[in-house]
Image 1 (tube, rainbow, N blue to C red):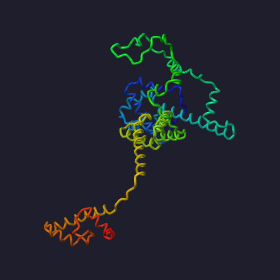
Image 2: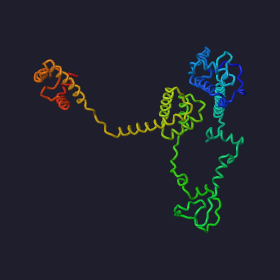
Image 3: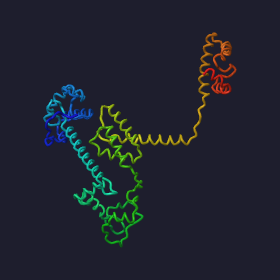
Image 4: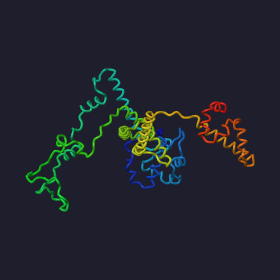
Length: 389
């Protein structure tokens, strides 16, 4: 839902970082109002055609009405909230974000339509994907030369880092004299030592595992289709469209860790419900990571259990023993009632039970009242089970 506004000058939008310099009370009110709008997935405090008044806004934002009345004029003056043409309170920043989202969607739709038209006209080089063609066209337009970024400069400096100076005896100037000498020392005849290209040495002589200190795990291939489908479900479950880039990164990481898409969505929903129980809302996909990895462990346990059950021979449950257990309990209750009816006399209770046992479908009185004995009797007399049911 969007505000009813004729013109929206995005150039006059107050930078959101300016909120840091505002008083603490104002920051709290602005954040509460934004949290309320985000939870409703809207940009304006409006219910259909009805404009919410300040009392309803305060209740929706979980704050006292007096606090909102005191701070809201300063919030509007600072540009963190505004009134539309019908007097409804709205967030200019959330509205701007909605407009930028629609503009991105329009550009994407135009690019999709152009790609579809090019495919229909046959104007697509064979053997190339859409991403490859787009990269080629962007390359023709120019761009930053390769190796000109800050990271590239840092990498070059790192590759040509000189070794520590060498002195006679194979000891450096800062070596602790109290320590034992190293088993391998630098020879005196080495002379001056220049810089060494570490990347060249790594490529020719040194295994990659000795450089990093870790064994490099083989990368797991995750299809782009699976990543995009998982990201779409993650955004749909959380409503965090502004975190789409981070969603792609976390989706790839979790999928490579062995998670199934259903496992990821289950973890996100479970942690979201837990946070909402504490009157909180997730803002970043990072908050789901611990729960996702916990669900991955549970998924692995379920998979191993399923495999183990398939490998283990299936045992057929014995239907007689549960039936015998139930009938034994009923027999005990009958004997107890007869015991009380016969003035708590054990012999007369036994005699009365023996007379009524067959009538109630119990084994004869000479069969000991134990589960094993009752089960053995019913196995030998299955008709008794069918007669009593």
